Picture 1 (cartoon, rainbow, N blue to C red):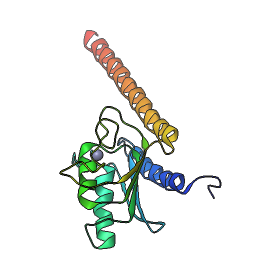
Picture 2: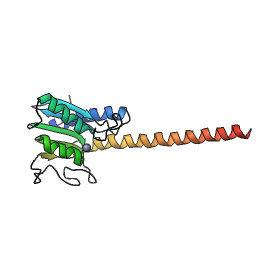
Picture 3: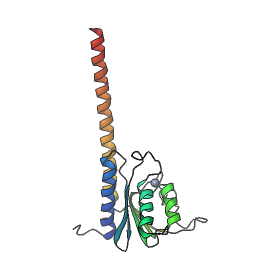
Picture 4: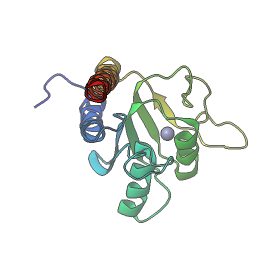
Length: 177
Ligand SMILES: [Zn+2]
């Protein structure tokens, strides 16, 4: 299975599978898995709308699940795989729970906090945690997953508007008669 893919790419595929769960319920498709000793110990997908919680990013949910799985807040020896470069909140959380590696798909030059916009994971004093950070793993596939979500969302919004216009036109016809 997945012949020819590197280990990082194989785990990123699993993160993309989590992102698919977000997309299935209309959430922005971001997914995350956390791996220790070659085994997935936690998963998470973006649930900001579902939970009505702006902090419910895929990484935050996965980090909490990983802490529960290892029974410690220290995630040394763990690798975080996430389909998009973590934001400052998630990178900040990673500083606190100290995974050894962070691997992401889509780089985010506007808001990414792992080197895209800023880098919180590169032993910034006083944060003082250094993670190995690798970006662009299956970046193109992750980007397509994102873009197709926004394409579909735009098409759905357009359809809704069109139906509203038709409804209004019908009501005007009825009141004219
Ligand atoms: Zn985030």
